[in-house]
Image (cartoon, rainbow, N blue to C red; front, side, top):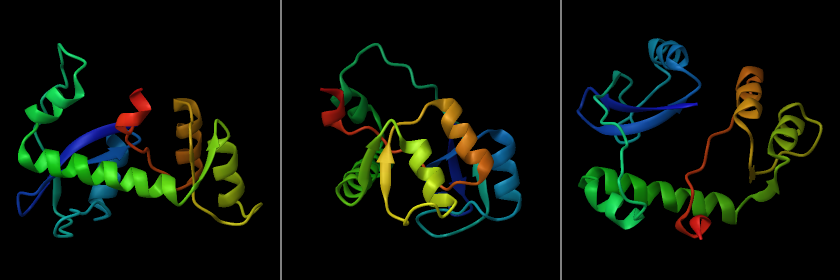
Length: 141
């Protein structure tokens, strides 16, 4: 999975995850990538500074982000908490359970857990819908 910084025709900045650059190009070409702020589908990659930090202090990293980035990070954290509150934690069995749901072998339900990069690639190749959740601050303790 790769994360791209994106911008829409209205200059809204946002980030999205894709399997690879080709996946982004395909989805973008079919107008499947849209701005979460205004739903514009004229989306392009934005210039992206490398994520380099001399410190492990997460608060310092958040302060270094601009206002829009701080708001987006807060919203992503809120979303991750909501998903975790309303879904079953299946731990290391995420890929297995996601496939069962995808293929109708078990009742559909919200799940979250852990998957290796190989498992995530396999799920994406099979067309299983999923997305990575950002880690919560308490996950780092």
